[in-house]
Image 1 (cartoon, rainbow, N blue to C red):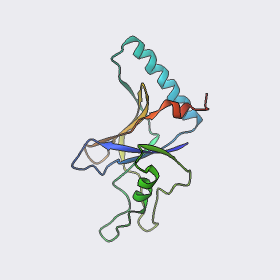
Image 2 (cartoon, rainbow, N blue to C red):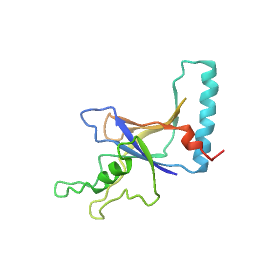
Image 3 (cartoon, helix red, strand yellow):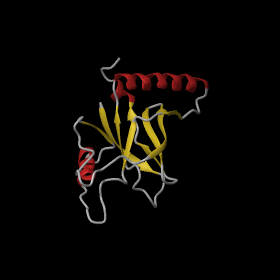
Image 4 (cartoon, rainbow, N blue to C red):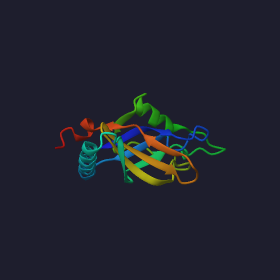
Length: 153
């Protein structure tokens, strides 16, 4: 399963970093999410004020600052494809062949990130990363567990 998600940057002045994320999930990674959810639920039983847990995780690739644009080239094809796929939704499944690279001469690439993490919440899972080149961070929208675990277990 390949999912495109909206992401929300903490830095309103430089909000290009990590505006979107793509997460590739297979059966193994979905089982990992389920196991982490069990840990979260057990801890929440002990302390009802627990809202979320963070785990080191690199499943998400964030996009926003490297859409292949230069001073001489302004093709927003990949970014437009992301927006069209989302169609004003917070997240959507995308095909394995969904183009994230764009033009060969001006390729799009994922943003450089540090501190990549998975966020386990009561209602679902999200991802978080810090910009490698600055102080801003981004967090994806939350994917409900019911969608991830549907027909899996």
